[in-house]
Image (tube, rainbow, N blue to C red):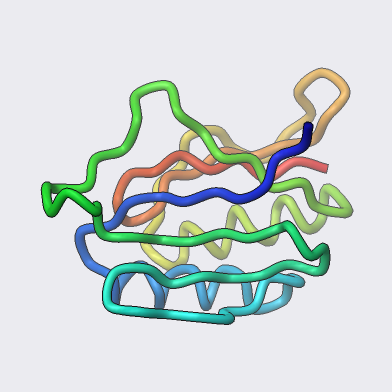
Amino acid sequence: MKMNYFVVGTNNMSAAVNFYNALFEQTPFKQTMANHRMTFWQGDEPDSAFAVATPFNGEVATNGNGTMLGFNVDSATEVTRLYNKALALGGTCEGEPRQRGPKFSAYVRDLDNNKLVFGD
């Protein structure tokens, strides 16, 4: 079994799309599709996808307490770049870039308070 895709909720699709388009600018993830409630980005691998969505049930999107999405990147430099980019786009720090056990990683929250980690 392997991970297929990530979806996070948003209450402001336009702001979320702008945040992730800018965050993913220098990565393999490119926006591939959008409809009235979801926007998708596809990576290099056929099954690697990321999406933001307004909740299907029409209720307010909330972040999951203890939920975190991890992005594996090529280097500590890329971890730091993505961390700084997320903060510049209005994200918030959840853990500055540093070595944590065998991985160099950094933690941020997006505009909807979803927690992301970048690790090499």
